[in-house]
Amino acid sequence: MFGLSRLSLRLGGVSRRHGDRRLIATVVSGNKTARQVKQRLQVQVEQIQSRFSGFRPGLVVLQVGDRDDSNLYISSKLKAAAEIGINAKHIRLPSSSSQDEVLRTVLGLNEDPEVHGLIVQLPLDSDRLMDQDLITNAVSPLKDVDGLSCVNAGRLSRGELRDCFLPCTPQGCMELIAQTGVSVAGKQAVVIGRSKIVGAPMHDLLLWNHATVTVCHSRTRDLPDQVGRAEVLVVGMGRAEMVRGEWIREGAVVIDCGINHVPDDSRPGGKRVVGDVHYASASQRAGFLTPVPGGVGPMTVAMLMQNTVISAQRFLQSQTRT
Ligand code: NDP
Image (cartoon, rainbow, N blue to C red; front, top):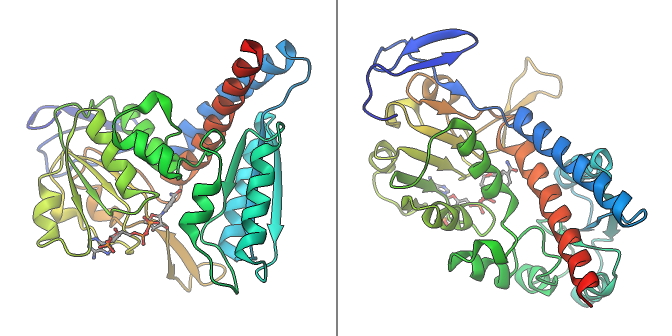
């Protein structure tokens, strides 16, 4: 794709020439891809149910406290689960809960055979001192469908991709990259952000899919220069519209994980959601670009559902073996 000045891209039925200043990036829709993933999962769950007399994959979302943004994310997870046929349960502990109470709840759910996926909604909204890592690591690696435990993260970092649960946001990004038809193997990939939930596992996934990966963070010097090298760019920094189109290499695949609320008086509620990439200018340079909203967000939810179904399938296999 890169360096091919005559490559034609299509958007909304309009074909444009790469290298032409009027190039507009192809929009990579997470809504559409997530819908396809969920339809496939729904069929799989129906097959499991008919084969194992009514068995349903079970997912628990454990929340501490009552953050508005967490409530919103949880409701979209519960809605997706209901659509697919996953038996999802939301457990909310009060923000006054002690760390021991949270840990006891996690350990109890680890033992429950009807729970195949268990996630702790982050960030914890607690009045008490909480060790977030201790709590996410208490989730059984067999049920850790967020892929955040040390065991799953360690396996991913070693390239043991089939033996772990892949974290949902980076996995969703890989699915969206796959939608473009661009293979990451041998490409220069740049990830902005090194968090446990987005940047670090994104690095691992790109690396083990054979990209050459650079990870940028808040101490990186000359971010525009690094961005300009990327044939594949994944951004998860939590800085509204910081990555400008002028920084982006022409024709690059650009995946924007950012979810930022910015003031906008023209909208109900007085704000709107934007990504970490400045969409209007990026769409003049990138070959492929994910929108915000409707890009990585829905894919994160779809990948959580996929991990839950995989976990339930593994559980059934372990039962039929014994
Ligand atoms: P974190 O705050 O945990 O991490 C942000 C990362 O970006 C850090 O590694 C930080 O560097 C880096 N960073 C911050 N500022 C800069 C800068 N100026 N230049 C270069 N790097 C910088 O955020 P998350 O990883 O949890 O989330 C990132 C974004 O993705 C957020 O907008 C979040 O809302 C969104 N998100 C979206 C999801 C989805 O489903 N779409 C799911 C999860 C997150 P350092 O390590 O040095 O501090």
